[in-house]
Length: 172
Image (cartoon, rainbow, N blue to C red):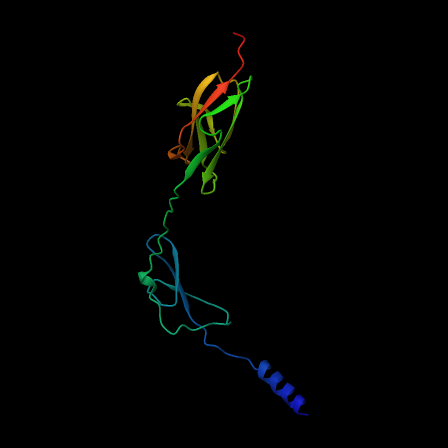
């Protein structure tokens, strides 16, 4: 009997509706055209109609006027390095072929391009990755360097120069 009464009491308590006071939310556009939401009314603000629900009342009112809500442009400091070949490496290939691989930090994103410099001159057009395959490179010492370019073509990072030596068999 006690269990039945306890069950009946819990069922009635849970079935009773709970009416919380609904907080008012106001919205307006600031000087930059960005939407601002607040619980504090303003002359140019509109009140949003909300459905009743679980609302937690704040014990203190927060003044949103002091918040800097202007979008900030984040500038990332990029770094680009040549992993392959290592500095002062001798490449032995009779076709004069060499594979060059670089690494970019932080993560490479769309719009960036990599320009390879071979002996101080641009090698082909910039590309959207840091792996290059060169063919028919003459015998002797060569320097390579990678430049990371932003969307406007401006250099935002530069690797250190790497010297490699191409060794090709000669008929002389």
